[in-house]
Length: 50
View 1 (cartoon, rainbow, N blue to C red):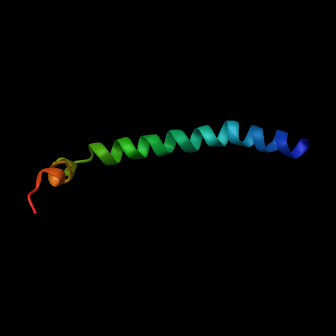
View 2 (cartoon, rainbow, N blue to C red; view 1 turned 45 degrees about the vertical axis):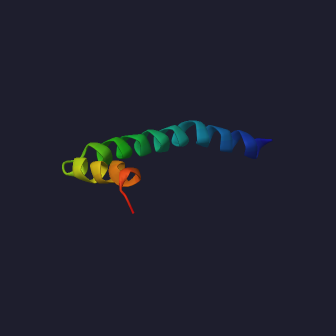
View 3 (cartoon, helix red, strand yellow; view 1 turned 90 degrees about the vertical axis):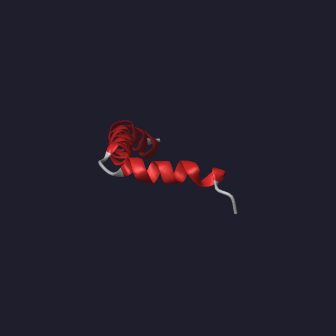
């Protein structure tokens, strides 16, 4: 049971840090300069006629 407890404490501390860093990275990637054009092109894909 000691291994489980150690893994749980590791996941509680560093897992939260990793998820917060990932979230911050996604927000920064989405709001970076120049991403508006890429987002608009991706949004228009379903509306394009083949």
